[in-house]
Image (cartoon, rainbow, N blue to C red; front, side, top):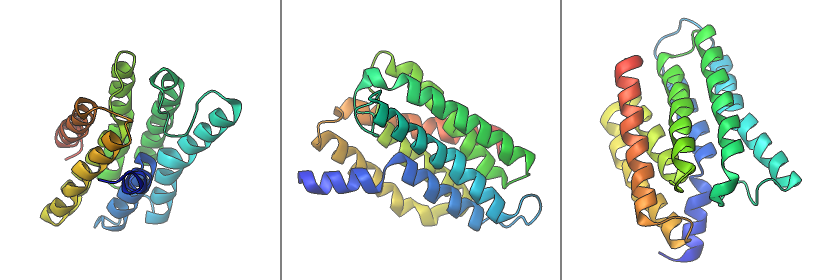
Amino acid sequence: MKLWVSRILSDVFNPLVNAVAAFLIIIATDANHQGASKTLAATVSIVFAAGLPLSALLVMKRRGDITNINIDRREQRARPFMLGIVCYAAGFIFLKLFHAPRLAQGLMFCYAVNTAVILAITRYWKISVHATGISGPLVALYYQLGAVVLPYFSLIPLVCASRVVMKKHTVGQVVAGTALGLTATAAQISWLFR
């Protein structure tokens, strides 16, 4: 895989982009018309899953707290991840209060919990957020749409390979990120939001 292709894959399938796409698809395809309007649920999801975290990253980058918004340096990840957890937890609370689609609530909950796990691991090892950020949303989309999503799971090795080619992660780090995204998201949705 060429370096320029890897950069494109890494940027296009950035975890924040994946979050927006997953929430919009889940909310748009939800058959339940009770609770929050789809527009309100989508707005809350985008603000708390991507808008606020991205804004925080941009501020941190401008202040010199992080080198770039992908937070490539492991030692710079703690504060952004903590802020992410707060954003996702608040997003979950708002989605629950507004009676947003249950799977949207579940995915936001997964973002909070999975990021907390990543934060704990990151103290010792640089697990791949890109790998978790592509695999977790795909699991949620599978619960929403079924087998039609299965071909999109082929994006996981492509995104993981892009991170390895760019020398941002080792094979072990992307495998661990993928395993976390797949298993933790599936477990939380199955046990708490089905």
